[in-house]
Length: 345
Image (cartoon, rainbow, N blue to C red; front, top):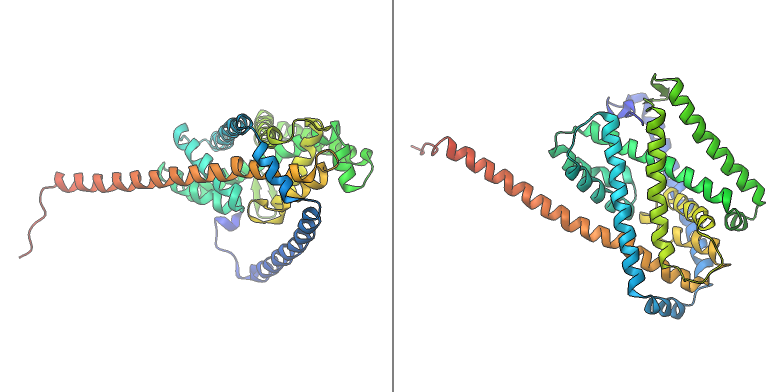
């Protein structure tokens, strides 16, 4: 959906150095502020948790439900590959699906755990897409487009969740339900307006250094659909690991899940560890005991984060070995094709 900022295509002007320093210090201050909030939130959450309850819940969790969570995770990571597929279609770049799926799945496995998706996810994509002929600028555009797909998806999913089931989010924020429902309606109106705007204008929109070439209305709807499906599946992994008997519906739970995910992302904590769990417990502890919630989230961390990361690491190691072995083999073939090199005098 977005083109690269000019700063990624051209050298940074010297007069922007001061602005970059201010941005750096603002980022540090924000990170420190979030760290303090995180410490307070974790302390509050842990005060309500008995670790024997956490361990007891994990021990009692049936293997069938773990397998169900693994299956939903696999489906969710397949949908994540569609982020890159739609980005490449938008950019009019031809890349085999096998390469796209490998780059996307491994990239998201790393960015989900490490954070800073623009850096960690792009690093994996640079290696794989670069071997397929894409330039670093193309890869950056794929990352930007995929990020916009996620943003549209979580905005739509979170808004629908809060609109239909406002109580958990309203209770957590201690605000009237009508207020959070109003914000949800406003979000949905913005998304609808975006679809209308893309149908009216096809010219690039200039925002500061960004040149945004809007896709077609069908393209935006596709982004919203793919992003929403991925969010629902990711939320479904944790949902499948929660206690079977509780009083919250999936739609209301979805609003809390999206809120926790957004706060975790903006915290810049790797994988949102601690931040995500704190928001989930704050939002759902009235319906589910905190110890059982934390036990379910530990299982969720293993299934949705750690397991894909381990598999991605193994897959990348195998790819690197095969890639370098192939290069060595091709170099040897070229040497044989030109005959033996002349001996030194």
